[in-house]
Amino acid sequence: MVPNLANDDLRLLWDGFCDDLKAGADHVLDPDRPGNTVDRVEGLRLLLRSLARGVSRTLEGGDHEYPELSWVHPMKFGQDNPDGLYQASGVDLSNTYRLSGNLGSVRYLGLSIMSFDFDGGPIEQLLNLNGDQLGANAAGDFSVAFSSEPPPSGVDDKAWFQLPAKRSNLMIRQFFGDWEHEVPADLHLECLDPGPPVSRLDAEGLSTGLRQLLRLSVDVPAFWADFGRSHLERGEVNAFGHVAATPESTVSKGGSPDQAYGQCWWRVAEDEALLYEVEVPGCAYWGVQLGDVWYQSLDWVNRQSSLNGQQAFVGDDGVFRAVVSHRDPGIANWIDTTGATQGCITYRWNQATSYPVPTLELVPFDELGRHLHPETPRVTPEERSDLLRRRRRGALRRFRR
Image (cartoon, rainbow, N blue to C red; front, side, top):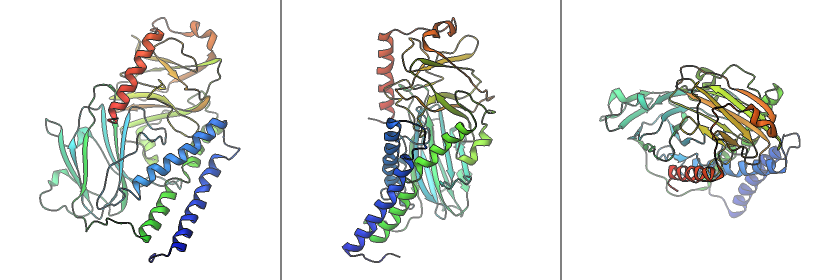
């Protein structure tokens, strides 16, 4: 317990927090990390983003008995999906919670309750549901409850899930195909048996919140940089040198059981282009994106650094072909590096019938024409400008900005 503290004690508490925070910058500025000065700047921005996101999970909206579904997006983190809308909240399952709302018309909606830590250990998945499993009525309205003990009266047993009495994290994933027209789910999370609200922050609450905030921020750059280093150590540069990551293999890392992921390290010079090719399986949603050396998505609001099944052109043979490059090659399926020279490339297959692994081939940019498929649709500068304008409008619409 932290008693009422004098100003000098509060100063020591705050100074200790600031000193510990410097370790996050040490991770970023480690000369052994891959990348250039801009990459280091982006790493420091990741640290600041982690702080901002952490404040919303700890000192603001972090009360388990008065939960709030805080926005993870548009803060970049962990190769965040450009087609996604992520929300999260801490929950203490010794209480009873109800999640209710309307499904909207998004391509995919998923709910996960899991433990989460940056200690490298497995993530324990306690509950996973998608939109088809929430028991929604014809209008898309639904209500589900979860707790360790039987719910109070008025809660439908068929919509109740019994879980271990432990503190966990609730994660909501919404994935969009049509950015301009699909309607996001309208969700509300409430604790059904809260105590009196705590409306002012005391010294104990500040001390606890700062400790939690450090845990959610300081080690984040190193955690994701080590993911990238693992690709380099396995020689997975411009090559997916692995069997496709199935949903079962990613659950222990916090992935959705409905989704298969694949990743490798991409590296493209100014005078090069990376050819991406894969036969698209039957699936509810799919997409591919570029990220930086810290597993932050590249600018996908103003630049076409990602494509999904709605946005992409797929040939009559069922094959998706794209070009990753710094310069616009004048084709529809261009994936823009936004000035980055390396990082992580990720693909996702959601509720898929199979999990094909794409191929990558590095070629000189000036020789790109002889590598393009005859069906490749061209895009004029005017058409590109219009595509980017609509892209930005669709992205901001998602966040009501």
